[in-house]
Length: 322
Ligand code: ADP
Image (cartoon, rainbow, N blue to C red; front, side):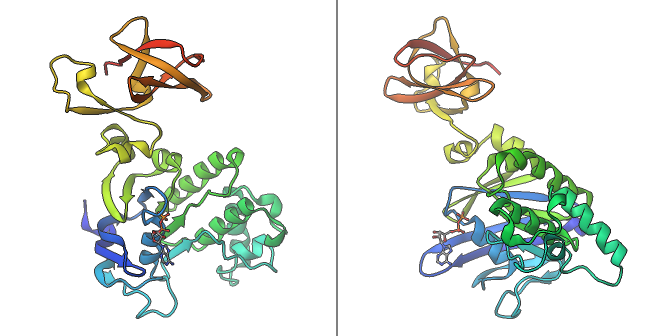
């Protein structure tokens, strides 16, 4: 990696609010324009990590650098956040008595009114809020306010954007388009971004790399594809949906029972006959297929199938050869 591309360098950062450590020895780097997503169960430290980077909390252990400059945190900077970064928190921090377009343009210079107008229009379009330009935030839904907050954060083209659950209040109809628009816009503008999310679609489809946190520790960091294909453990795999942890000896005679394998439901299939008999308990409609939940002895197993299967029916499963 050429050194000049490196922007954020987080070195062995630990943090605690009180006695319990919340972030433990976190190290990673981020390049210019890179999109990193942070995933992990609720309470794993995702929000705290963003806040620490933004400079809301003082860290006793570890260092954070931006280019070559150390970020010193709230003990040194009274106002959190450096000029080059923006942080969009779960509360949207919009001014209630000015319009959506005034909110978005709040930090833009009035010196070039035509340029400012054009930029606001462009951003309204990116977040799908053009029709609400003249409306005040108090008249908007939570999801609409969230979209305005995103537009406001990117208005001045920061070099780094920190997003905490950025689409949590946006309804599913709008979410996909918004996600595509905003992340394409960030790439186009070469704005680096760290997204804390519990939504695996944010992570799998849009991030360049994904970090997995558990109890404040980084358990894995990889490209979304490798993280998904070669999860380090069941915790990592289960962030992408249901997963089966099964002894390999179920499928191969010559393997010791202690060896286990993580198999996603699409890596198993229902067949006419096999040594593995599954008693179906539930069939969940997933749009393109059904997720079948069943019992294999005492184990619960998930397998994808094209059709609904009634409860208590016995079927046979096998692993798909890849
Ligand atoms: P996540 O974003 O992954 O859900 P958080 O960073 O919000 O996780 O929280 C990590 C841990 O820190 C949790 O145990 C949470 O209860 C605790 N925590 C978060 N904010 C505070 C706070 N302001 N004071 C004390 N503990 C906090």
